Length: 190
Image (cartoon, rainbow, N blue to C red; front, side):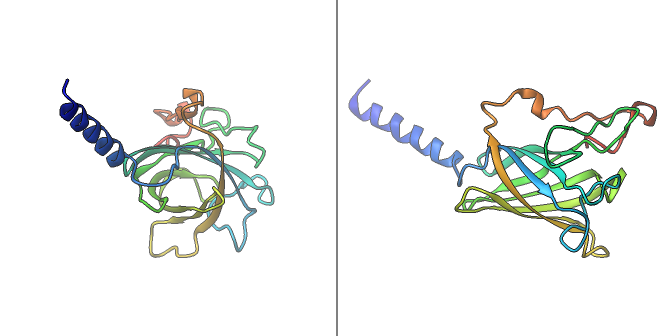
């Protein structure tokens, strides 16, 4: 291959790589604690223990400006007791991110349409999220009910990255969706 042809191949490869890298790296597994229900949290909380912070896990993979992933909920902020959509608990376990994007500033936006612990445990609820990657490496922002009649149903979350998606077990993307009420919470895993 000539020097000129090699140069064009390198330029094309660099252009392709830069086209996919639209902004800061937001890929990974992120953890946040939803505070106890109250003024700072009208959305995500534990009905069983409303004063106990709920653990929220965000798994993100970005592909250029598009983002794929899910939000998973834990019974406490310790991330050791995952919620289960299966009988006998039939809890709200997780929800897939929809219409998710990341921009060149590290702003991540997404929609959820699934159950929400504390607000809508057994039925889907439309939510929108907006998180910003800060200079200190945290993803900080809000998750809000996407309905004008519920303006106070929101929670502020501050996520810290605990792992990269590349080094994580693929089981982190398992979000169960029971087919019938007899099988568990059908609003989970949407």
